[in-house]
Image 1 (tube, rainbow over the protein chains, first blue to last red):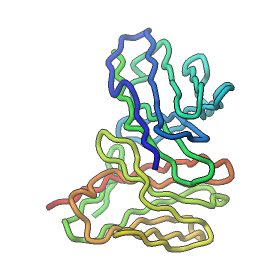
Image 2: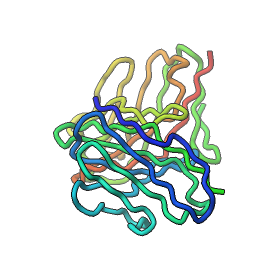
Image 3: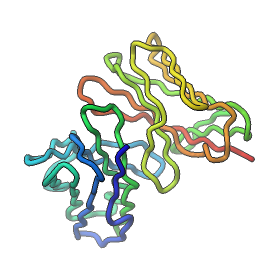
Length: 114
Length: 111
């Protein structure tokens, strides 16, 4: 099974600033995803991070607000731009190899926006 | 018993009892289902999966049952332990290979 790490694990940010979250997988994975999880809620998919091309965003999420990079098969970043208190949430990175059904998750980044 | 709180439904059980966590899914075209366990401060962890051509699958202390007729999925945990306390999510997946997560159930195991 793959191990996924995220940095930072948590942060407290001021309104209007941006935060970039890093995701590192210890093995190559075909697919990487970014999720948002509000406290006590389920996971909502933000986007699929595509290597070498623009991420595929889900309805309600746009590139200007959540730019994503994926330079290789083991690393991705998610930026939360121009933050507001409504962006306070847990952001989870996930990876999956198309050859296997199991999808792995990082520990999450807990973001608080003041 | 099971009740619906402000956010997550909660199931409270005594240590040693069997737990049953239920999930209703929405897409009749989904062909693959997964149960995840999420402990506080951690990401979801894969527990067990089942394909739509099966109605039951067993793992270590866990059993997943699938009823496609009523689009219902359940996770049974035998001899529940305090370490089983967590939030449990079901997820369904179709041709997109991207799972859709259900609401989640908080399992509390009392020693």
